[in-house]
Length: 414
Image (cartoon, rainbow, N blue to C red; front, side):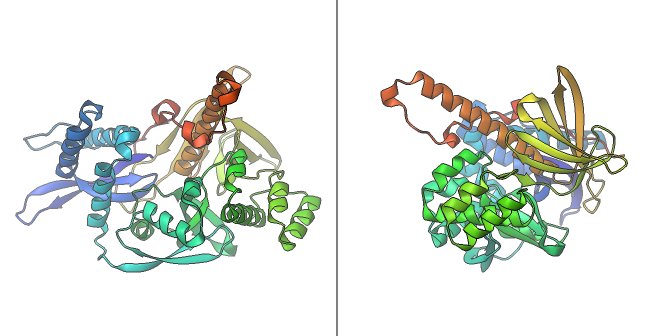
């Protein structure tokens, strides 16, 4: 999770007193608006339960703050939120989730009621389920899974994604919803065209398919996603592969279809919207796929020549998302992701300018976690005696500090 507070608002209460509201964004989208006093009370609750695990909280000021002091507090609150979110025991606790649930409701002030929420399945079909406005993404995921017959032990392999559908049914993935988000309110805050919630698998390591397809529902979902990704051009088959896949799909031979789809180029990858890259030359248009072992970029050079580049996650030193500050809530935001990459022991900084920078960062971190989980699993299999070796889900080993893998920075407005 990536929290930031790019803008604040000054308000006046009913007695004429002034106070500051902090606009908290989660992975590029407005999550909620809070006062310092709200976060101060929340910090005290966290500290009562988690003691010294809770990072330091920005101090109170008893005199009027200068503009510089206000910006310093905003920056410190942003750092505090990010540090708290990186402590898994806190980020999954009831205190953490209930706070943001309450703040989201207070921010958007949508009356509590029952609604029918459509969720797009991987093949484009919609499933409507009844939820409350205050239901979280985790609750919605449980309801959808039960309605589809997806076993609860496989629910963690799938997730709910916020998407935008553009002309010609082009799909743009905005972000994966976190468990404590209120989907209806997140949809309300999204700008830039029709938006929806889509069910997709939440992993990139294609070897995990073997665990999911043990369920008939899991197999159907994987086949539907493979067929949809093929249709929208995310996978790149040869003509012969396309004919074979079409015949298998028409014959209803799902397992064989999935096995053939797994051999496609970019199977299991997520393709980003068109963006620009400063490598090998500035402002080059690029198409980007994210999956194992990292990023694949098809870059258009001056003169309309194309060049393909592979950037492996394990050859990156670090990466960071840069966000151009908003001077007001209505201002557009420029996003980019930069990473340090080694070319034959020579380090170079590479920047991708994309509005999906937060999504890209999260996917890159997922690749890193899955790679580390497989290494941990392989080491366990080597050290365990043969008679006690057992297959483990890679998700049980996916524990890595985001602080070690990713740095976040905020650039000043131009």
